[in-house]
Image (cartoon, rainbow, N blue to C red; front, side, top):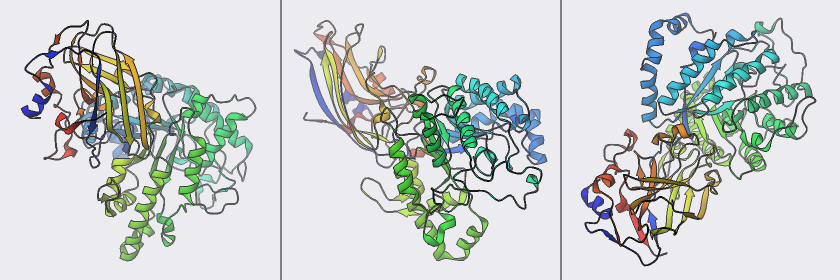
Length: 586
């Protein structure tokens, strides 16, 4: 930021006192093109840092590497940390990791040493400035029987680790059942919609026949107990994600009419339920029809007819909602891309073109319809390639870009400040008023609670005033208006202050870290070292002082020292530049 910009905020003469409180209105320059590395949204990445905790059947070379002391030194000696920091610099703010329990499938208790190592690995995620989605997994093959008493106890134990690290656990998948904890191909536990999966030609099942051929109330009760256990042994701030829409609806219904021996769910617990669709936008197997879900492991509605995923999922999301008026958490990853479809697309260029166009449109429409928060960019590669190949024209406020890029910008929330009117001169005893119009250009609202503060900062004194009546989770896609009036701090020293909007993490231990704060999609207002969004200044005359000292040039200049973000390119405009703010008529 140049000296001329700093001079706009700094006066050589001291500020003269007001006759009465005064308000001014300002318009803020939108940013419709940048990808913002905001927390708890966007593309997330698979994390292999928990692999060493398992008994997973890795190939011999990798298994040997995981037990090598050199790996342990690399993992906790900075190697993994630097790899994660590189992802963070690339704009990835979340990770996804299976918690492998293969070795303990027949054990009632998890060793304390294992739990300590899990907590230690989560500490590396925190140090990298990221968050993580966890899923308990007992097998990466067709799942053997998991004794319910064992996994319920394991949930209790892992819940203690999650509670200790709830600040960086973005969500929990209701895993455990089925291969990879994905709730499919396990007739004894996770049959859905009465569809029986064939077991022929699978020798691993030769000594294990299903106890029932179709879904039963007993299986539904077991799924309910699993989800209830997760909800009861982890903090209310952590969402619990279920793969299938039908099972999500099942849990919501059973909460009102619990199985014998189980209690209901509280409204807070119901608000935590969301979806992690492991077959998001799975259009590939339906390429001849140009889109749609056609995976044999997907649940079907009552009569097993095909259904339109966009309309049905959107309708369910609208019905479910949350008690506080926000969006339910919606995560996903794309389905396995069969080799025959890969070959077909390569040998038939016209088909490949249709796959690109249909795949991109389905992904975008489904992301918008279901208020999608985040997508795994590690799986499956061909789907992501199709999104990168699909070039979209400019539309409305969206620039011309790839489908991948549009999802990158708009997954989850994308808050933009349109204009604000607030108090710019005040004395002790005066109220500070703030009116704002905020647009959310993303597909969803913020899904985890976080406070909203008005900050008054002069570089020496800083006062953070929480807007306790404001819930940022209700700033859904579209326009929101905020009108508040708060008392200025009683001990506030006279002077000129920066006024800023600060949405830090819910957990106080992360509030001092800017990477966990929300950046608005505006040009010129982000103060990266502070983690807040600049609104303007206020002159506070305390007990009627006739003059106050202006903000120092050094402090204002330092607001432009932002965290390194190479995604903005070599010629990016400064993230902080008050010259891009325009005073308007109230």
